[in-house]
Image 1 (cartoon, rainbow, N blue to C red):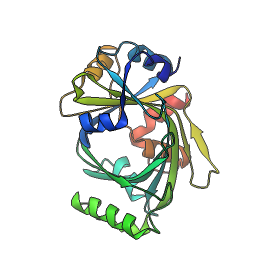
Image 2: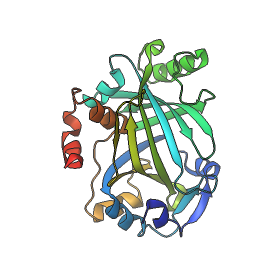
Image 3: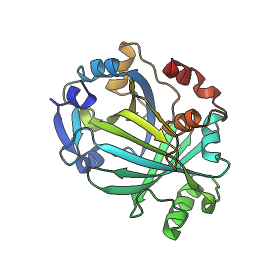
Image 4: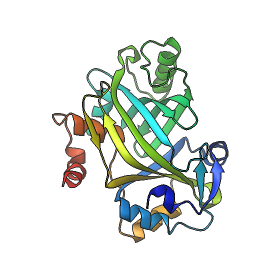
Length: 252
C-alpha cells in the first residue's frame, strides 16, 4: 500500500483551498523518518475530518526541486553546524500542474519562514535572472542574512511524490514524501530512499493532532533537512555529524 492508497478514502481539498485555510508560511516544522509500513499505519489512523490535497486529480503528485547554494556551500553549513540563522534557496516545480516557484526558506531557532514567487524559469539557476536575484536578496536581507546571491549555483536536485494533508480545524498541515531521490545537478550521482518516507508536520507553536498520534506510536522528530541529508549522501567528505545516526540507520 502506498501513501496515496492509505489516504484514498479521505475527503479532498484543492491546493488553493489549502493555502487559504492553512498557508502557514511562518510555522514550526517537525520531521519524522518512518518506514513505509509505519507511515501507512499512521495514515490509516488519521483523525476524523483530515483532508487530502488533490492536485490535478492526483493525491501523490510528483515534485521536483533544484537547490542553490554558494560555491562554499554556505547554506549547507549553516544547517550542519546548527547556526542560529539558516537559509535555503530553491526552485520547485509541481509536475502535475506544470507550475514552478522560486522559494526562499529561512529559519531562526525553531521558527521557519517560507517566501515564494511564481517562477517561469523552471528549475534553472537564479544566477541569470535579475528579478530572481533581487527577490532572493530581498528575502534573505529581510531575515538578517547576507549572501552574495550572484554567486548562487545549482548544487542538488530532488524529486519525490508528496501527499499533503490538512488537519481538522485547519490549523495544521502535514506532508508525506516518498520515493525520495537526490541527484547532482549533472545527474552523474544519485541516491534514493525506497524503504523510508519523510513525514513533516507544519503548525503553530503547539503540536498538531498528528504529532501526538506519532508520539503515541513511539516516533519522535528528527533533525532533518532534505537538502543537507541529500548533499551529505552524495558528498561524504562534508561535515555530517548532525545526521550521522540517521544516515547510518538508513544505510543499514
